[in-house]
Length: 398
Image 1 (cartoon, rainbow, N blue to C red):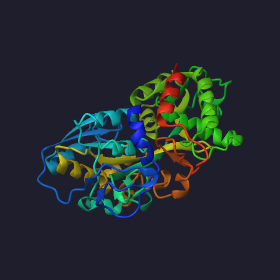
Image 2: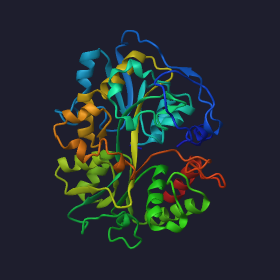
Image 3: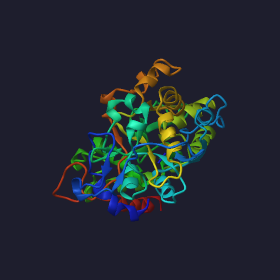
């Protein structure tokens, strides 16, 4: 779901870190790149519930029956814990980062292009996973990763993961696409009906395409772009701009545009696809041959939350087997809890979404914030930072 330059300098070195090891502790030691995480201790115990928890989430992650009466894991949580939920659905990672800075929220479902920015800014706290019983069943492929831990200390619990897919109108886009060519071809027959995600991180989608079609650029990581590689991606995006009918960040608005036929093809989330199909729109989606960008989201707790116990209870609830299965099926993503697969209504769901298929997820480039120190390991050049991406994105859109 999904841009502030002031966070880039402190976040930059943090994004080179790789987390491994323990599940609770203190941060503050110096890691790779010289980054020093704000010194904080994970809590060792919880008090009584405070009666409320204020969340920031991607659309579809916190459902209370408003979207569909049969889709509700908020009211059961409130009944079980006494913690009343207030949720703000955000459309981009940049929005989440800035909302968390206000101090008004207790927890956030952050993607990998926001998590370490939040850590570097001191907006979130280390997590004691021993206080979250459901954590033990999280797939090992999602635990203690560079985007959800620092120096061996967990900073949240994995929610799930998925790919940014290519959605298309089956009655307008023929033959069915298998490549991202359909949105990058300068002679696109869908001029004015192409859609792209409205965020600087979308530059990585252009880089993924160039990795496959411009081997001379030698792009190894779409978030690690030197001047030449970055300029090539920006040039491709500027050409695409002429074909764009809508840059989107509001999932519901994109669905409506596909339903009306104002949009025919472009990047989307499986959640949007599922919702459009449930409303009888003639759409389908594919993971193109070049691979794609994607997300691995982490529920994180605000550094100065006033509702600590309720926040911990929410983290445990959202990754518990039954609820995590519900969220995964509703949104259209692989669950994080390994026991969820036995509880999905569609018994083939986890196979379809490659829940524990690490080979599949090797095709996905998880959102990560670009930094000066090239994330692909190069040391002889500098890479473009998120601030550079933000400036370029404004120029691309015009």
